[in-house]
Image (tube, rainbow, N blue to C red; front, top):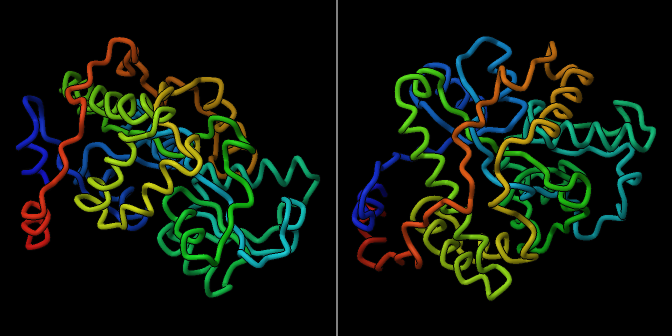
Length: 306
């Protein structure tokens, strides 16, 4: 995986990726410093900071990119229809959970009018297919999976319920921020450049998103590129990769919701868990590539043997 990235990189640090199947394992790895940076759901990052773990949110992973999905043949047509139903959420420490609580309050529902069940994100589609839940709310590509396979439909995209929805944030250990700020900057700049590249041609054919679906699907996530292309292009604003500076006003709202619903024990000031100095001005971000080098069949085959 990393050897292919290195081969096509003119310069810069190679950051070794590691996949996690659930947020609990990711959290423990970060606490134990087995990893020093990760993409994580926002309220969980806040909870770690509240618990005294030396971490800071330095950037967003993306905007939107989540949906509320119900069965394809379900009679559920609006949020009110979810009353008395069972809905899977990725974690109580997720903005998907807070959004559900926010919507229930908006519609005058009691906290237990919808049964929210914590379920690892990869298990959401299967739970819906087995009718173990009536719906689920989670990040992509797990929403598109039910769509493509024909047993689920999107009831709401998060962009329509909470515009510029934030789910995924980049969290970095404070020791790395203190000791290697230039490394943190390089990491954030690389993420920003990738996001700029993904978004720059989405209204002109979205070739970059289609390229990314192939490379990321085959080389990093072992997922069907057609699934990822669906996520990235249907519709084109399903997920956004720019405007990723952590916004104080939105984070203040997330913090208030988290405290109000008992997800967090106390209010924290923005600066206690966020460090925005690494977020670059996108106008100054230089993209080190114009076209993503597509892996050859030989490269893909060699990766499969590792």
